[in-house]
Image 1 (spheres, helix red, strand yellow):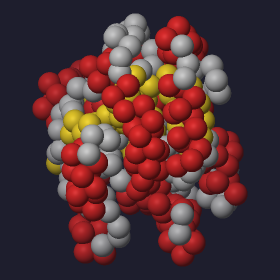
Image 2: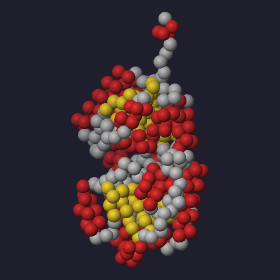
Image 3: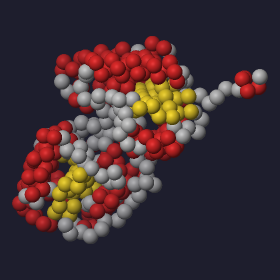
Image 4: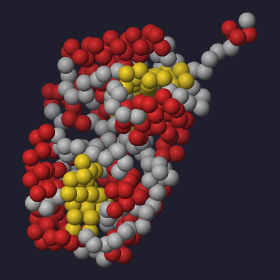
Length: 368
């Protein structure tokens, strides 16, 4: 009788579209939730699923088509979520990214299961008028009974209020996922020559790589071997020939996808991210925590990481000319000035983006 009366730990179900990204940026949050809850994770298996299992999480492989809307595959996903909710009987659900937010969120609302959602950026969905109206409608339906929605920058939160998707009282503004200051420790600059710029991310148009290529070509014509523009990540198919050509010409150095990016931050002097839109750029936070200067666009999700002229520079979005000028300005700094920029970035991360504080605020909202 005593065993029957005792209740197991409450269960949290986490739904996301990428196991690798969840582990990279949210494992500290999950570790904290596991102190009081059983945690089940629904996700496509693209890396780190074994690490989650070793942590003690139950993992459910859930294929998700991350690109576009396909009625057939999306219906399969909805059915998979419905079955999962029935079998797992979670006490609360947390979702990350657009499809889990909408489909799992909608089902949780129907079943009156408490749920919290994370909007990690607006992406392309809100860039096209027709698609934006459709996605707005989906979000309104999915968030009808949502408990809390976490946003990574004020502009995204304001956009959701403007579209009447969600009221202010249900919004929680976070400093992105925060940055683990112990994992991304401060490293003094290494050798000064050449001055190394580094891009980290998917090589795609919306990350501003076209502007970066044009700026890099012009800078290499002036500074030659005095500078290096490195790229870490994987490229979209349309950029394969371009990347290979630029590398052959000595304009960029392409290092491909790297599971461990810290050594690349440490060898760099400045991280460059001319992105068109972000939720909150983890790359910028990690690099600044390592003590590296930043050059990025003046957009929500990027500008928050930079104090102009203090720990880096902000350039105009979609402007190769503006990007070139800021990169040129960085090259012309003295070694001491560059190092001070890096130190200022570390201080800013310590003061504003400490992951421990972000996790604490997130857990407080989830469990309230």
